[in-house]
Image (cartoon, rainbow, N blue to C red; front, top):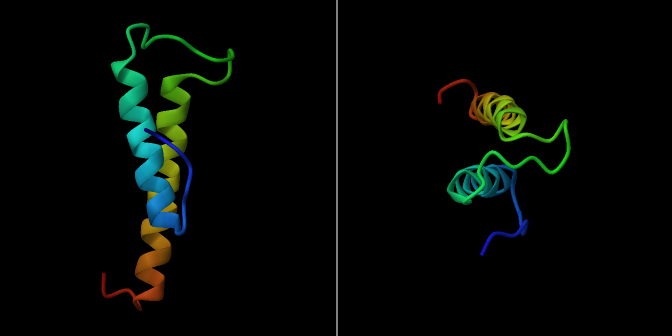
Length: 65
C-alpha cells in the first residue's frame, strides 16, 4: 500500500519513487489524472526533488557526502 506517512524528506522521496514505479505498473500506465499531472511530469518533479534532497544532505554533512 502506498501512503504519504513521511517523517523525513528522504522517506517522502522514497515514497514518491514508489508511487512513480507503481504508476508504471498500472494496466493503463499512460493514464493522467489531469492534463498537467502526467507520469513524465511527476518524474521530472521526482528528479528535481531528489537533487535538492541530496544537496541538502551534503550541505548538512559539510560537503563530505
